[in-house]
Image 1 (cartoon, one colour):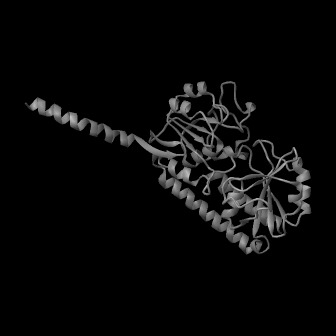
Image 2: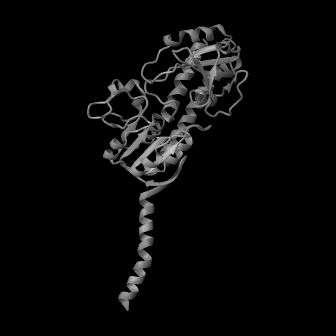
Image 3: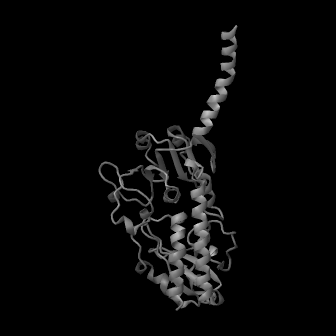
Length: 325
């Protein structure tokens, strides 16, 4: 009788204990492709895209593999390990990337390499229409985050901070970012920048001669946080700060008004940045009434991210102040 009672009690209790144990070792992450249960303390994380890698660096996750559109074949050893030269001058200064395994391009990662790594979590950047999610999920729990939103990387970082109990670290980082933005605003205000230039545009020029207006997550998000208002050219509607890319005519470059800062960001593969390659576009912008400010991303940088944007707040503010002296 006692044995029977014990077995019945065990049958009722063990599932509860198992569920409690599972809850202590896993966490549910909400992301742009669903809701996924992942290890609470992942030890073998693969990150696909620099935008997500920037968040992983900020949260100090243990990254063993990276997928990237910016890492070149010459940056990878014969053993498939990332080997970046002059790390301290690149985006990779923000985290440990040496000897991390390269898993291929962010859109089409190498599945065999991923399988061999045996990751316990995959984090990737999400774009609408991006495939391979099911294949990745068969290798390891996979979470995908878009940065095509007004808050850019912040909501993704907050959600991922559930990993390893990093919530306090994420909050501290966000508070520090806000403090740096506030200090930069004060510098610009003191220098009288807003009185003369209350608006801005971000123009990305290619060596091929084409020019694009970037309205969302390429410098524009930082300029908005600093207190500037986007100046949309005639024919382009305000997109609410979401990611927008619009082709520009040469006539538009000449018509920038006097109250507008033009942040010129040369297109780059993240390694070779040069203003000289876009000289024709620069010459046209200099003929306009707007005020030209050049900004060059550090090598390998994502378009945005916690470390990238925090550094940009400082560097872009300095560039603006220097240019208006």
